Amino acid sequence: MKIGLAAVVLCVLSISAFAAENAAEKPQPAPATEAAKEACDCKPEKGAPLPLHNVEGCSGIFITSTAYMCNPPSKDKWFGLPTVEGHYANLSDGKFLTSTTLTENILGRIETGFAWEHFDLGHLPRKLTAATGLKVDRDAVDMLNANLRGMLVKEGEYASWVPAVTAGVHFKYNLGYNELNNDLGHTLSALGVTRKDDLEYTLVTTKLFKQLPRPFLVSAGVRASRDAQTGLLGFTRDYHATAEANFGLFIRDNLLLAGEYRQKLCNYKTVGALVGHEHDWFTVDVAYLINTRGVFTVGYGYFGQVLDTNAKAVWGAKFKWEF
Image 1 (cartoon, rainbow, N blue to C red):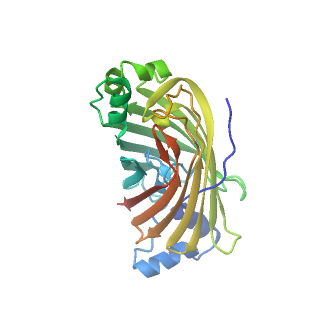
Image 2 (spheres, rainbow, N blue to C red):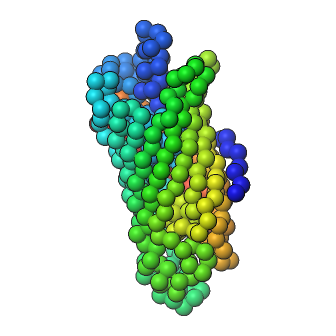
Image 3 (cartoon, rainbow, N blue to C red):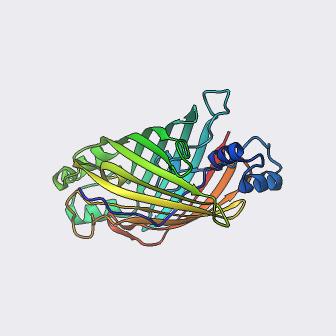
C-alpha cells in the first residue's frame, strides 16, 4: 500500500466556519464575509457559501474534500438547510461527466451527502466493438454515492493551531457495471474489476491561515478505496490508500482561487490503448461568490489517461446553491 504525498490544489474556504471562529475571537466579522455581505446586500447572519461540493457529494472542491462542511445550522437548531450543486466536466473525445449533489449538515459536525454521477463513454463503445467484435450497447455509466462524514475535531478546539479533522465512509454503486461487463464477455472481471459497488473511507484535515495578507486554506487527506477510475469503471479486489490535497486563496473577498490534487493508483490490468493506466488528477479553479447562497465555479484539469482518452485538458463548470 503506497501513499503519495499531495500538495497542489484547492480548497474552498468554509467562511461560515471562518466567521464563527473569528466571531469568538473578535467582535467584527471575518473580512471576506463582511465584504461579501456589503457587496451582495445579503443577510448579515449568513456566511459565505463555502466550501463547495466535490463531484462525489461531499463538501470540498471538484475532485477532493475538505474537513469543513457546508451550511451548518444555527446554534439553536439541529439541522442546517440543504445544499445542492450541479457539475459538468468535458474530458474530450466525446467523454463528459455530470454530477448532481446534495448535502445536509447536522449539528455542525455531521454531514450526509448524495451524488448522482453520469459518465458518457464517448467513442469508447464503438472502439471496443471494432476491436473485439462484441456489441457494446451501453454508451454511459451512472453511479450513486451516499456519504456519511463526521467532524472528529473542530478547528482550534483544543489549541489555536489544531486543524479541523473529518472522517467519512462512502458507499458507491455503479449502475452500468453489470451490463458493460456482460457486453464485453466479462472482460472487466478478467482485468480485475470485479465489483459493481463498494465502501470507501476518508480522513481529511483542514487548516485556515489568517496571518497572511489574504485568508489561505490548506487541506490534506487519505482515501482507502478499491475503485477503478473513482468507481466509474467498477471496483477491484484489494484496497489501496491514496493521498489528496487542496488549497484555497481569496484573491478578493468574493473571488477564490483554488487548486487540488488527487493521487490515482491502477489496481487492474490494462488493454493497450482501450483501457489505459490511471494517472494522478490535478485541477485549478476560480470560484465567484454571487451572494451568500450561490457560487459559480470554472475549472481546468489534467486527468491523464481515462480509459482510451488522454484527458490532458479537462475543463468544467459548476453552480452551487445553499438554501
